[in-house]
Image (cartoon, rainbow, N blue to C red; front, side):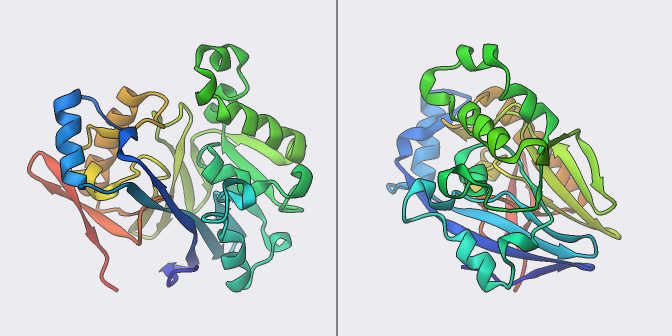
Length: 276
């Protein structure tokens, strides 16, 4: 599925919905312990955690880019639909100039891999935060984590084997005149978000800084088990929400439906969806 396009100056942005990810509430965590976690679970309600998995398609003067690539066929039939949505939007894999990865979890990076780990995108450059690549190629860091939390290391190795020197680490800062990579550590150590600018208007695609956007904007201490460094993820979330509210950014995300502005609400925040 493709949502209505969002236009930022000369850049057209289509959200390609890869699918809906659903998981039990037991993965919800909270920096303030079990009582705060229970309150967050009550606020969510007696239902599984559920959120969009999004890929963003950018078309502008510097060509065609994707922000992340979804799961491809690797996570089962409920996900992996971004490829079809991209084709329906008139873009084929060979048309894509670059993929801007936010981090190397499976719902963001596995869509880069075709059958037998052939490159799904035959000519695109794959840009990845240098801090992310450094972490997920460090064997000491891998061994320091429980085995069930090491998927990013395996995915990174597969991407290197598939794309070779087309997988390029980039530092935080300007990627193009219109796109800046900003550090959003915590969910993974090198996670980045992409800040798009046209004149005074800025749109931040904030990756997995928030998964449950409404809950975590009102209660930034709430997180998910998938955050490799939960304390840093909370600090990043608070700083990010405060900056987005103060600077009037529009925000979107890998797991946010649509676009919104961040509004300070007392000691917390809320998201105000854009009209239309």
